[in-house]
Amino acid sequence: MAEDKRYTLAKFALEQGDRFQARDHLASLLKEDQDNIEYWLLMSTVVESQKERIYCLKKVLALDPRNRDANLGMILFGGQEAGKVRSAVLKKRNWIKDVPDIRKKEPKKKEPKKKGYDYKQLAPLAVGSVLILLVLVLTGVFPGTRSVFSPKLTITPMTWTPSVAPGMGSDVTGTPVPDSVDPIGRILDQPYTSTPAYVLTPHPGYGIYNTALDAYKRGDFNTMLTYLNQTVKQLKTADIVFLVGEAYLNLGRYHEALEQYERALFVDPSFAPAYLGRALASRVIDESYDVKADLDQALLLDPRFGQVYLERAKYFLEEGSYQLAYEDADQAATFLPHSPLAHYYRAEALLGLKDYKEAEKSILTALKLDVNQVPAYLAAGRIRLETGNPEAALELLTRYGSHASNKPWEFYYSLGKAYFLSGKDLNRGLELVDEAIAMGGRSTNLYFVRALIERELGDLDAAINDMAIARSLDRLDFDAHLMLGRFLFEKGNFFASLVYLNISERLAYTDTELAQVYYWRAQVLESYDRYDESIMNWEALLSLPLDNVPDEWEVVAAEKLLPTATPTPTNTSTPTLTPTSTPSPTGTPT
Image 1 (spheres, rainbow, N blue to C red):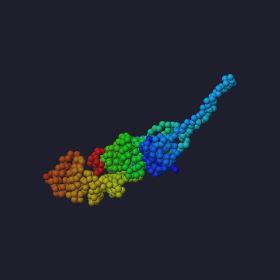
Image 2 (cartoon, rainbow, N blue to C red):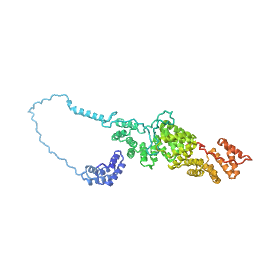
Image 3 (cartoon, rainbow, N blue to C red):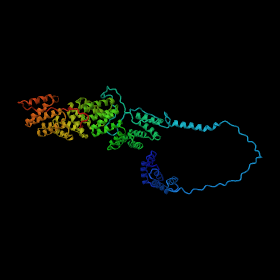
């Protein structure tokens, strides 16, 4: 019968000096099988008190009274007497000695001739030494040698690219772009630089281990696993066990990978990479697994572990915590300056924080490091939209759509917004935004853009409804409140319009935003026959720094303040989506 895994772990723990872990495994085994002599004998070596040891040994003797180990243990620990001592056997002495007759002369014995040393006796030793040497060379134990019994290496060259855990989000690894499509920054010939492997501990004298590391660097994980399985029998260290888990993880054998990571932590609980490996494997096996605890522990043990900062930045991006994601991505870029993922995640976080200028710098750096990183084109397109370049955004998003396999709803939203801002096809833009919502997209910006397209197509009621949804998703969003007030003004609902314009005034952050509030509220109050309050808003508009007030609005306000001024027609121009301010990375994400 195969040996129980818990018994193997108990012996392994005892070898490592962990008596508490061994005792736990043995206790669970004895609950199921109390008649196993080996379990009781091993338990007697890990219990704390002498009384407990004697109890375990008595259990053994009850099952096997002649067990020598148990009897000896009982004597050593005072559980039983050693028994009667046998008396020594007295030998009779012969007191009568023969007296030699000195008269008799014995003939002299001939001394044998001295001979040289018989070297033939060394022949077996010499033959044995040669055989041992031959075995060591054939098994690959000597440095620079490889076992003839090991599989022959037939490794095809592979591109070694770091990747995030499978199943933890959209594709972020490099995807080849056909030659017919020129990627952004094609004139930048800087090649992609892979992130060096964290765990490459040298073990001198083990050629098999070094061969496994070479396979790891090339991305040949089958060969890596073959050689590591030979090495781990000789060196049971945390780094080697961890590398076995890495091989399993990259081969898609996630349960086996998780088992190896757990074993590495058992060997050395302070081995930081094993916590990262456990987080990645567990998240693939169970999507609800919270990886943050493992990532936090890894960084607590090694604050300079760049790969962990990458994974935690990705975690925060998925949670919508853009400020925390920015901080981790920035640390990752510090420790891994040549990692395109670090700069890509940094750009995504800055995009969420609406710092479009810095986001553009980061995404261009990511594309310089890897022009074939497909997700970066989606981020670049979204950033170009926010910086007022819809034509370039449309090109980048179209290129992303032709190469991405699984497109998120953000792609359809961004592409629809690009069609709207470029003015090429409003109906197509509305279809794309509708598709984003059908895929489960739900954000203030998504409904905000759909409302703008619907208003432009003449469906004001639908626009008001979507703008109200946008406002309900983020009650601190200035633009949603201001635009809802404007739409209600166009609908003729002056009272409701003033309600949302007053709220937008409290949410205004810059003088430019205040100028928008004063301009539109002055017109609503004038249409509401509240001329005195209207005049106050026109005066407030002109009191702002003129750099923040459009020239057309300044002229209208000046005319309104003339004694003979008359009401002017309502401005119904298409609202712009040009950002009014560029907050820092510490701003509140929307």
